[in-house]
Every structure is written in C-alpha cells, then in structure tokens.
Image (cartoon, rainbow, N blue to C red):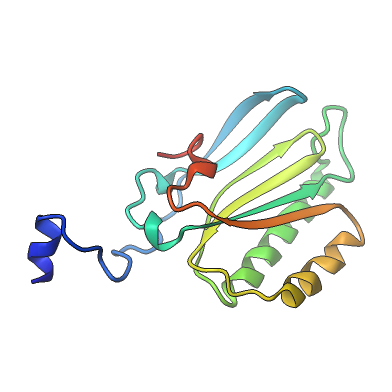
Length: 158
C-alpha cells in the first residue's frame, strides 16, 4: 500500500528516506557584501535533498570574530578557534537532535553557521549554559526558527 501512495502522490513518508545524511561535498563561494568580501563554505551534497521536510528547523548562529585581519576575516588562530566552537555547537545539538550542517559564512567581523534540525528540544537553561562560556569571549547570536522549505540556505543549495 505504501508503494501506491508514493506513486500516486498520496501521503507523506513517515520517516526520512535513506541516506539521512547525503554525504559531504564542500565548495567555497566568494560573496560580495556591502561590508566587503565574504567566504561561504557550503556542503553541496544537500542540493535537492529529499528529506528537507523532516528537518524543518533552521539553526543560525552568528559568532563575533575577535582576532581579525584588515578585511575583518579571522586570523589563522582565530579561524581555528571558530572551527572548535562550531564543532562544540554541533556536538551540543547532536545530544538531542539530528543535525544537518549546511553552510558557514565568514564575513567582515563575523562567522555565521547554518544548520537544520528535526525539532527543537532544548530548554532555555541548556542554551544559556552552553553559550555563557562562549559569550565571555565574544558576542553570539543564536536563533532557531521553522523553515521547512530551507529558504535560509536557498542562495547556496537547491
């Protein structure tokens, strides 16, 4: 019966199709922004990803770049620290969510991290506990909002 529903377009699958994670295929994209050059690292394996509806919550994090060069981009040491923060963030989210890391954008003074999750399960206390340590060193903006069409990353993937 499930086969016929799929063929005739009735019903939505109850769980994501395999593979849940489409793999990794990163590209770097140069972006001209009003405050200068930005570099986006995008996982293009998510182009035409069939399971978007199962991960409709966009997680956006903006991290302040502390040690930067003349164009506002991080020094090598600062870039390494930002990468560690991103890994820690993904580990934190993966404790309770399925996490799809789509892109990060490094721009004048900031790095933006863009991910999607299944359903927010974090309490405000958990979020505060995680980000309080980071906020001792740098500004952080964290947000989760529903984006079932993945519009937030539509400039990077289809």
